[in-house]
Image (cartoon, rainbow, N blue to C red; front, side, top):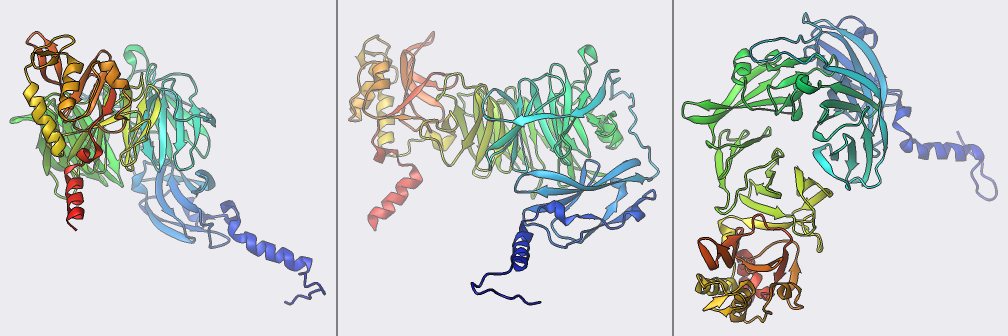
Length: 614
């Protein structure tokens, strides 16, 4: 083939068209590749045991932003980005009966899914096609009005996805799922800052738990109890009624587990088959001895990469203990029985670790690597930081939980604990927290907040919260100036309370604070509200440090680390300068008056000293 050029060196129209076609080829939509099953005929007969699945296309290449998935009903069999593709599928992974194989195109640039091909197959492994509902001693009678219905989902772009009250959160595949107080679900892509809100068939709520599995988004709403499943490619929503009144099926948490949705948290654990709507107890999957040990005991279920975990809190001869079982391909082994605190009030389970919360601290137990390795992380003596309300959330080396209107964070790797208090915004109350890369997402009464531990906001701090490092290191004065302040404060201990006083014969709260700072060479006015508005110093919104002044309505105090304060206290046992804490305080303004050189932490000070010696 050759082309003739005109005098102006312009390509003929035919050549231009061919060139445009060649340049456009990499930009073609994934659907133009037309992937399909190669052995459709062989899949028509009833399938038993291991079968081959082969995917081909009219062209071998795929656009760089697309990948393909093979699914059997709602279960993902494989994900791949090359054609042709072949895999061996063990049909024992699905129940007997009809099954649909899907070939799905995933566009990673737009987060859209397209079903390229589907084929109905029959599975014949000699097992019942439905999971029967059985009444045993461990599984009470099921409510009669449990049922399901399907309809097209109503969804719309969300202009302000992080605003409005949020009652539940879930992170999966780089997306944030937000449950609303009226039963709706918002799907938010943080990277693109785009969201869509899905409206369930009937209004309800609030959403109390969210889970994802096999390409389906699940959420559990309360009052009335209902479970929703949403498939984005088909824009179809399935509503599962969990009964009403005395017949309501109790559930406070959901998780994708063993190809089913597990309902736990209130009453015995139940397993919902998403295809049939049948509900069964644990004995439908796990051996009788495991199901028996879980009768009437708190149970948690987790799954990751085909590894299923089941934990049971039970009383043993030597005290309470948690049994953790691991299941894979129908086989179950006991990872261990781990003793926990007598006053255990909450549990958190992930495929890598277990956390058991007591009133005095949290015990963490490794479930990977050195299985059973345990560590105890005590709470400050002045605080009650056990979880209240929402279930703790653990991911990687980060453990987050809500306690008394605060957010608590434990870095398991660094063994550092911190509390985050909502002092930067009035009316801000945390409800749920989930771990994200480098921080957490928090559902609050004022919307969803992002806590980035490495980059606090200059005005909002950590998503509206002020961070308090806790532990022995936080209780020690970090530098010479703070050590001098600690000695000055010690000299004021026991001075009686006297309104308007500022001497060691008698002092009030602001008289004590201004006198301590006068000995530190800093002049402050006498009056708590004046200290809160004085032009010197700075307002602190990110992290409390030793020596910061806390200004409350009509009162002030000096922060001395680990959640403790030095201030005038008025109790039946004492009226004068003593010790108290920050716990339960609201409407606080934090002011910092010490010179910056005095605020160097121990590691920073050593670095500075090495630089000076050079």
